Image (cartoon, rainbow, N blue to C red; front, side, top):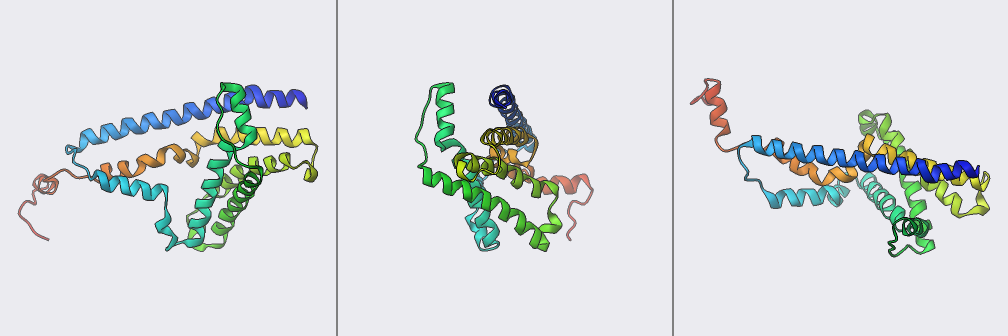
Length: 233
């Protein structure tokens, strides 16, 4: 098992992390290229920048949706907070990064780390359950909508067990291996699934405004091309 652990922590992690970085970089470059191309084709560079910035902030912090879907929105917000904060500020993870790159940063207290871990697990399961019991969401959901929250939860479940040896259902080395490999699998899945929105969300509103942005006199030009100029509806 030690050999498998070394492989999971070494070559497998390096491949998974590199795959994630390269995949997300590809998404980002293609998105920037598409934005530039669409902007050039629009023929009008005048965009409501302040409105786009506000809409982007509302995408990132969707507190406004608490009125429409309070339970689902609150669950989603807490889920994202837990899964984004914990991996970067967990003491064990920071120690590993310090050994690898020589940089260090503040870590979460153990009790808070435990609470965020349990919060990530609970909200991941809650998102799946809410999709199952809501007919409107169930009709719009596909397999990835159920599988991805569970995939995200796996490293947190195994990590919590790893940090609490007294409740281990399997040997310590097995749980450790499952934790590392589930994290590696998640890294690979990020650029291949909708999890890539972690890097693409800030550009979504700009893309939407560019796609639906019509230059001045577009209506008249379309009417002229269709031979309908001067007609009224």
